[in-house]
Length: 214
Ligand code: GAR
Image 1: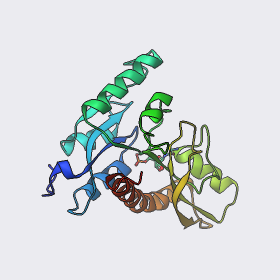
Image 2: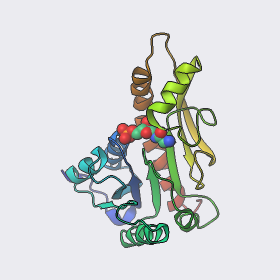
Image 3: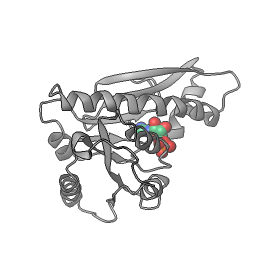
Image 4: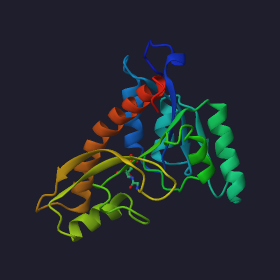
């Protein structure tokens, strides 16, 4: 399936999506990019897991993919260089982490902060700064929210500064935690909100880049 959008690709911001898992956020971003009004196109999918759902989805939509990991590049500097080269080759201007379970090299954060503010974004399945940080990802987050008997959870899109979940918060959506919720049922409800929130934020950021604000 190819991009049915008739807007010339040159008029859009080139976005790379980084993902390690099922890729449902990646797919929501791809679908959004097909709108005639989309200010971005998904020009590359990057993963540290060549067999993940996100890579399969990208291939299904004819989006170029690159697999880079500590297996392909055991040396950290070589990994960072290979990543920078792939991003340059595809003329990437903005990055969306969508369930990407690997810390980004500081060099990449520097390259994508040309005016001092990051053009790399991440979605996290909680209301940061709550339930963020090292080892707080995916289902771990929802288990912790339920164990803490929170009545509200949600999702957060934030700028990436190279640490875990600490960059400036851009947007959040709240989701009620129900008495009967399991980590799985809460995850599914939060994920539906992620799919709405993330493409909207990326659209806003792509427009800011186009307008020289970011
Ligand atoms: C999403 O819930 C995302 O917020 C989370 O991983 C899931 C990926 O799902 N990310 C983190 O926990 C990052 N700390 P997906 O592969 O279906 O998009």
